[in-house]
Every structure is written in C-alpha cells, then in structure tokens.
Image 1 (cartoon, rainbow, N blue to C red):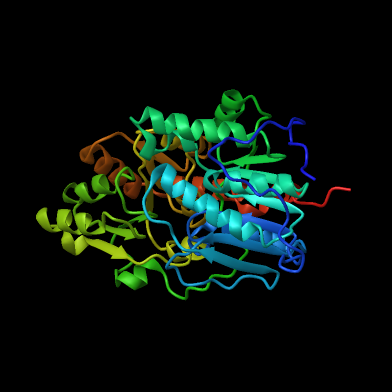
Image 2: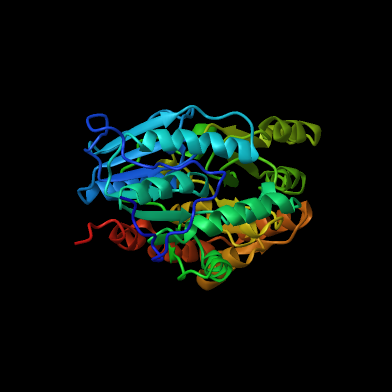
Amino acid sequence: MQSESATGTRPAWPPFIRHVEAEPPYGLADAGTDIAFAMTGDVYRNVRALKQIRSLAARGHSVTALSLAGDAPPIALPDAVRVRTMPFPAGSGPGWFLDVHRGMRDMLSMLRPRHVHASDLYVLPACAAHARAGSRRLSYDARELYPHVASTAGKPWSTWFWRLLEGYYIRRAHTVFTVSNRIADHLAKMYAIPRPTIIFNAPDVRIPPTVRTDIRSTIGLDSTVPLVVHAGQIRAGRGVDLLVGALPMMPHIHVALLGYGPAVEDMRELARAQGTASRLHVLEPVSPMDVPFFIRTADVGVTLLDDSCLNHRYALPNKLFDYFAAGLPVVASDLPEIMDVLRRFKAGIAARPGTDQLGQAILDVIRNPEPFRDGARAASSIFNWEAVEPEFCAAFQPRT
C-alpha cells in the first residue's frame, strides 16, 4: 500500500520518473537497516555525510549508505554502518541524473528501512519513491541551492528543470535540512514549505585525528614563514586563481592548496609563469575529518567563492568552519552569509575582487592576526557539530 505524502496529498508522479511500485520479493530485501542514507558523490569525501552517518550510528541506528563509487580511500566507520556503491555514470545533466535515479532505485529496492534520507537533490526522487512505497519517513538535505548552482548559471532551461524537480519532491519530505539562513528562506518562499532546519557545515572536533603531521611540517616550512591555506576543490569559481595570482605582491608568503580538482596544473603553470612556483604548494587532500587538525599551523585560511550564482552567494562552506576550528583568521569573498559570520565574531575580513585587493587583505591580517584568531576561536565554540547534532538526529527518531 502506498503512503500518503508528507503534505497529506497523493499527486501523480512525473512521467519522466520511474518509481518503486512495491517492495522487492520477500527474502531478497535486507531488513537489517534502520536508515537508508542515499547520496551522489563519494561518501568518503563528503564530510557532511560522514558526520551525519557517524552521529546516527552513535544513537543506535543501523545505517546503509548508498553512494557513487569514488577513488577516496575508505574511512573506518562504526559497525552499524554499511556502504554500498554504484558506478559513477558518464555524461552530465538530465541524462546523468536518470542513470543515478535508476541505480539508486535499484539499490534502495534491496532495503527495507523505516527512514529514507536523500542527502542531495539527485537522489531525492528515488528516495521519495521508496519512502512512499513502504510508508516510510523521508528527509532531504538541500545542501546546495540546486537550481541555482554554478553549472546552471546562464542556462534557464536547466534552472527550470531542477526547480521543477525539487519543487515537486521537496513537498514529499517530512523534514528538510539546509546549510544557511538565506538558503532556508529562499526554499521556504520558493516552494511554500515550512522553513528548513539549518544544519551548518561545522566540523566534529571530538573525533581524534588520524593524521599525525600538519601542513607546515608536510611542506617543510619554518614557523617564521607566513603560510596561507586554501582547503577544498581546485576548480573554476573558487577564486584559487586569484590567490595564486596574488603571490607576486605578497613577498615571502607561501600558499598551500589542500585538495584536488581540474585546475591544479593551471595553478602550477600560473605560478611558474609569474616566478612564484617555489612558494606554491599543492597537497593531496587528507581525510575530511582531519582537515582542522592538519591546517592548524597555517597563518590564514581563505575562502574565495565567486558571486556567479545564488548558491555561491548564500553559501557557508565547510572550509570556513574548518578554519575556525583550526583557530585561523579568515580572508573571504564579500558574500553575505560568510560576511555575516565574520563580522559577528570579528574572525576575518572581506577581500574585494582582484589580486591586488586580495593580496592586501592577506597582508593586513598577517600583520595583526591575534584579534582575528580570537574571533575564530569564539566562532568555533558556536559553530561545531556537537551543537547541531541533536537537532539533526531528532528527525530520525522512530515515531510511535
């Protein structure tokens, strides 16, 4: 029997989505899972998902994480957690989404959880179908403003497609999470839903680090040499080119890029062309749970999203809270959500667009870092996973 939707109605399913009509045959289903936790991407690279899964397991829930296969080394997870993966589909856009949908639908069909969690929009239709077929609760983590990400900028039909898809399925969820105040307000207004619960991308500093070194030791850099770190993906739209391009105006300052992405070689070539290659260090990513510990010996953390889409404008990225946890002053793009936090705690300053302006902002912080360090520590006492964990986990408690 199909369940009523979270809003009390039962509309027809969109014709382009195949959904799960019934449970799998008895004997094939895995009844040993409380929560099916579905997501695209590599679960072992997604620090938000890892924190959530660990917290659910710590509260006695058995969790099966369904994700796309990636190349990150597996991370030890609690005994109550299992990870199942599907191959990463080729292509992009709606075709890629349909392949993800079919794969997730098939993996979900082998599970009989009491709660289905969609950790992103791309798995939400399959999760909603499985929840509806088995009268299960459904939650959705809108951790991006999906119709307005960088890849849809200037593409009205793409924006329309994802907005139509999200608008239909988000109303099926019993609980919706998101990452910032402005995204919560936007979703509530756009889809006429209750304001989503905000779960910040704050790190869990209670977990002992697995890495036994730090960024400065790894580079082999003396403690007297200023070091600026950018943690996260190295790709267009992240401002990494501005940071590397600012090196000539920051004599004696070194920059470390901690992450991966398609623009790595471009950044190395830029540094070689401007004669600053000896002061640019590109490091392989560490376990996402280890980032605050690993970067703690740097002097400044930067987050430089460009204002190319609403998703960037309203973002509160992981790296911002990692820098706070490491006690690092922050130099950031002048974006409203990020600046609200930096101004509240006096934990950093804005960098206006341009390499000269960025370089000057970094120099200003390095010359007088202690007030910003104090602000970062104060922010970390508020923005940490321990503070938001109870509200997230409350949504997964069995309903009587």
